[in-house]
Image (tube, rainbow, N blue to C red; front, side):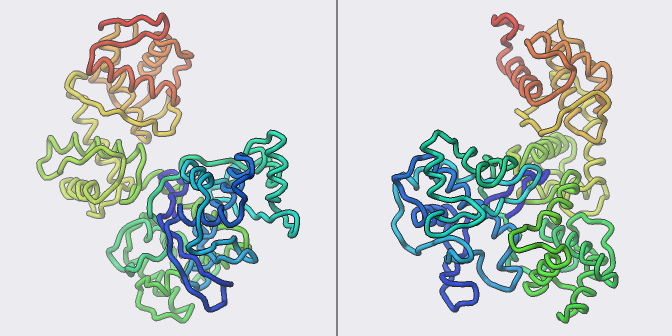
Length: 474
């Protein structure tokens, strides 16, 4: 399990491995689709006749427990080869090959990508629960949730009743098999990717307690000689073969020692590691990521591909797949940068400057912008080239203002990626023209309206002025 850029949501695994017994008991392991596991546990733990809000609240809890076990590598970091057990003494009930209740199956299908967490945290919450009649616990009482649902409590209100007011529901986890479980291939000198970055962070934290392990000052997902040296020293300290290669044994030993030095309790998670990584995700893009920033990267690559024949064009789909990585590598070759396939600060700067040199020479009519998703950033005056979205805002306004005289004109040769007074004035007049609060700030509402108006003007020549509700042909 991992996180989308910015580290705000987990990415759901496709499968989960269940141990059909107590952790140390010799028993069969079964690997099943994660969604089927949730349906099975819900059908084993809950009554289909319960009110829907009680079922939903309990399914949120069931999902979050499973995600927490995977997210924290609770069993695998301790040397087990499974993610969770089927015993309620340790985890939650799973009855292999049992039947599934239709209404529970339907609910799980609708909320499969939802889980709960505490506000300000990243990891799924370990939502302990029990029946509340035969057994009691510090978490949610399942029969108590039925009583609350019958009193009109919503699923969130039920959860907050038992777990506290800072519990929130995350509704947009991404479904993709992208986990921090060891993936079967050793990591060694020259490798790149998210797994390398995770190990770099963990080793750096461990080195605080074991100073003989050298610090990795450039944490960028590139397995360089410094990383190899840190791995080798870690292996020496913990009696592993000191070959500088992160194989399965070294991977889980690093995770286990990281858990130990950060004093993670039984029901806690590895949040410190991921919270640290999130700060770097703002500046580094790696194969496997998806989101608005990847979409912007792909647009940049496509523009560059028209000027540099070695750089292939890519689909603007927001997913950093192998084709995007190949295009990034070709760009790095053209610019004489280290060919890593990663978007680090140096690559971003080179790409941004190259794009800026191109765009300032092209009138708005010559630039075709895709439907950019909102990047989750509030843009205000004073922002500069560290936020590439400013450049897109200026390009959108340059075209829109050339078609609507009431909006402050943004000359294309002044598109510089800096949110200055001309850009702010254009934003304010745009907001006034379309009935938005004239703050001069580009939040999600203004961003989406900019994209909508741009595309209407670009492809139909018509735009709706929301101030008076009339259609104008521009």
